[in-house]
Length: 451
Image (cartoon, rainbow, N blue to C red):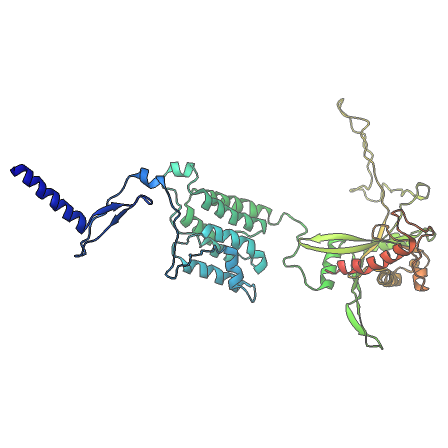
């Protein structure tokens, strides 16, 4: 009897405990929900089985106080450059963007993406050839974090993404011809250590750059002249490669106002001619015409200029005169040697090189407007030092022979360009359409040559 009474008391006490506060398991979410009693007793939560948690998963939603979802938009590093440098893109604004990034987060999270974006934006800000900007960009890397601690980490390329980014910075410096300094080395040692891939790239640059610095005998100045006349003089002297060649400015660019009030801009005309070319032009047969050809492109780094030449056809073999060299003219340095050298049995006797005679070039010029009227002024200026041009017919071969050959006398008389006698061209266009196409092509070609 006593045992049955004890059991009844235990059951009653258990019911009261369940009524006051019980642990209920939610079948939908698999989580424990704690119901507190009236005295606000804090009960410890228990972890449920992982099987229940995986049975019926529900998506997690972040909700604000007002019940709206949180939206997180990713801001790229390139947008940071556009936000800071809205008004002007200069070196100061570029450095300001770097300062904003470094001061935003002390851990420099996302520094690799930021450096790659900065390397792309450097030409837009005009700092692609500034060594101090490259050093400041390397200073974005956290210091003494990516340094290899042992030979195993060095062997397996410790932190490969960061090292590849550092090598990319040095490669862009190499492509623009920027030589690192001691500050660059100190930064690389602090960031990656003494035996890392960026340090090896730095050592290769410092070995080869001094060897190739003055290897070009005709270096292009940096920066290039902005004045078109100075740029034309530099380009013509580079093409001629003759110290005796004389550069002449036949016309400077200017703007004139007509009686009707219309503004007319005149292009610059710069020419070059050497004494040897003047001598060849004086010996030229007046019955054979000379040609003005062009435009021919010339690239000076990223700047393209165009030039025109005055040339003649190759001299026929029957008109060639062989110059007889006097063997006693110079005893120590003979002008011609006839040596019969012994040949080996393995030498080829039938080896020959075809010599192509392209004809002499008498002069060159540069102008910003390559029409026939402008080139006629160049020919008139050449005629002052070369009177034979008044007796030699001059023909124009502009745009690689796409236009009809025109003489100087026809242009001075005011004759316009005549279309071909046939009614249709080879491409199927009628004569009237072809004439209109030529008239539209002339100003387009003139505008394309303004550099």
